[in-house]
Amino acid sequence: MPKRILVTGVGGAPGFDLARSLLRLGCQVLAADADPYAAGLLLPETTAHVLPPATDLGYRASMLRLCEKARPDAILSTVEQELPRLIALRRPLADLGITTWLPERHAATACGDKARFAAVLTAHGVPTPRTVLPEELDGAPDGLLVVKPRHGQGAKGVHVCRTGSRPGCCASSSPCRSCKSTSPEGSSPRTASSTAWAEPP
Image (cartoon, rainbow, N blue to C red; front, side, top):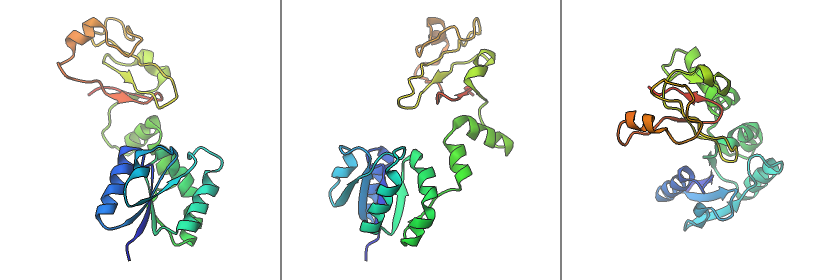
């Protein structure tokens, strides 16, 4: 009998591609997303389900209700914000006979915050680009830094001049003329979230 797999986040590329791959492997796919217009909900041969966002108070009840009704063999989540919620549901999901592959809570928390993740890597001796917090930006070394905010946070890009003439000389997402001239053709700056900036190598 084909395995029934619940894939969440089918509106994004990871979830969409995962659902298609599972279909090719002969699995029965339950496609779920918070967006009723998500492309993955329209995939042929899948069963579409709309769930509340992971931040919604009704997420837990809706997920359990879906799992009790559909009885998937496993859940594969491709939504970062869902991981802490699913970790909290590990026991009731197991009681329903549903397999999950979930990290420990502290690991999910560290991976969801770039600054904390960098600190964990450093503590374990894993080479990683130097990371500075927003309040440490004035002391950041010369280099091109661009903020890539998470959706809805509204943070602006910050550019630090490569020439070192004035750190933070460009308080916008566009490099100044002098920095454009020193950047290799076709190169792009390293990006980070609005909670941390990674120093370019």
